[in-house]
Length: 216
View 1 (cartoon, rainbow, N blue to C red):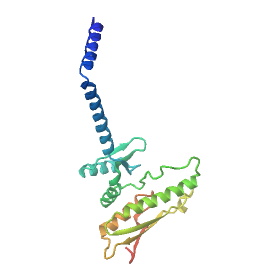
View 2: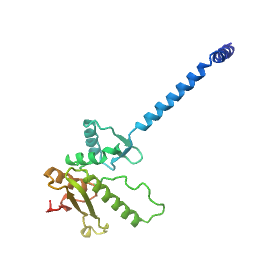
View 3: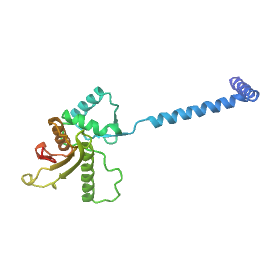
């Protein structure tokens, strides 16, 4: 009985479609509008990039708290355990968080190597990572107001089996400042913290910051 009733309703609906040719046009138009709305929403969705990864629970919680206070949208990447934010805010947020001493941990991993060739040697992989990290740090430092250009050079010694022979990493940062501009103490501290927190085992005292006038 139910099947017969359903079949009857289907036939009635088809008959109404034949009687009113505008109905299929309305249905098609509604579908087109729905597709357009979906495409617009997809296009407006922000592109997310990694802000920090390999964070301790304490650092992760502190950073999430700051992002919430700043009304910055964020999400977690389950694959890498990273905190991701809109791509156009990555450099600005790293500096703002660095001024607040975040992250406090030593090792901060950036997702820089998206297209690494299969079968690459461990040495080449390390060299590529170091170059990518230097470039990423340089671009971030260049977002500071007085800075026109920046170069970062990292000295990352090979691990030693003997603790006494193990050397700490070091870094040199050269900034080209805009005419008549200078870095204030907060900006200098932020740059030093940003670089030292990007490399495991790199103490802030091993970061040298230089501008046109000499050591900052």
